[in-house]
Image (cartoon, rainbow, N blue to C red; front, top):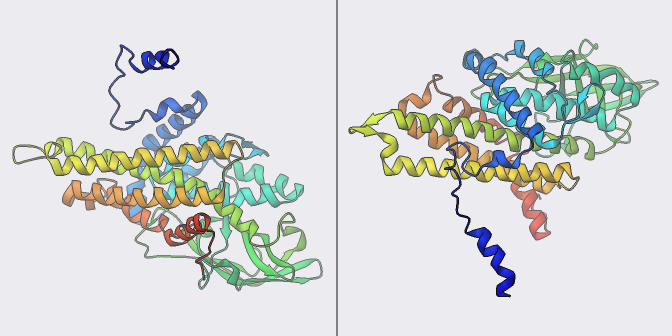
Length: 405
């Protein structure tokens, strides 16, 4: 046994020392990525820093979405980037996750736009649509020529979508939609809505084009969160659409919930970008801000805050990366997505709050990204399944007992 263990002992006592870890990558996660994955990350990172960050604070303050960035986002191949064919990039899940991380480093509104377009609007067409629907919509959506939205949540039904009141009644070769959808990202700028409604044979998905008589939208104003994002209501009043606009490949809640799992996966990565921005801002500020004769980074309490932020960021990034690897191997389960979404959003929000305390009064201004991210994360904490709902999903998985009712 001693002879068997000797090579391992020698390997564990290498004579060279590893280089000191970088403050923004303490576990050398960069080393775990492929060359292509790093290329995607660095390309989006450059775009966010050079094109998005200079304008995002103004858009947040004005309550507007930076729509002028959409052509560049499309040009990079980020819309539906994890789908194959139909003009989509066909990249792996980790690449998609890294893109979400870098976009949310800029703002949750940027990542939300890409998530909704790719995971909530394009994915259901890709997974459940007819060949004609795929060929008609996906190439144009990948180019950013058609913007999509996803209509599931209603004013009275969020966490329990089975109670939805939006209905689709068959009338000859048409369906007539009646109902309202609420809190719909991209709704006011969408050219195409993927709408879930109760039909005679169960919950079905429908493609509704802007301009269809009986289909109107109204934007939600006075938001304190996700201000650089369009949030809307969708209204359907005797809205007649062709029967061929129904997604033929799925019936029941499995359809919309599978789309939500795609979006939640992107969130699990994306919020790490917000945490990165807050941690980096706090670290740089602490090293330059002097009190009592020295930088506040030299005080124990400040160092503790920075250490907690850095540690939780590493844990969240490793969780997201493992989830991505499982997804690329076809082994990811919705429970794992829920666990990652729950943990990473929660810790990103905690990081934003800790960073705010490091920056003091400066932390509440748009000169720094911290309060902007903190406000945004309050929405991310709730949407695509609240923290409580994801807690119950994981709880059911580990106990075998449902606590939803």
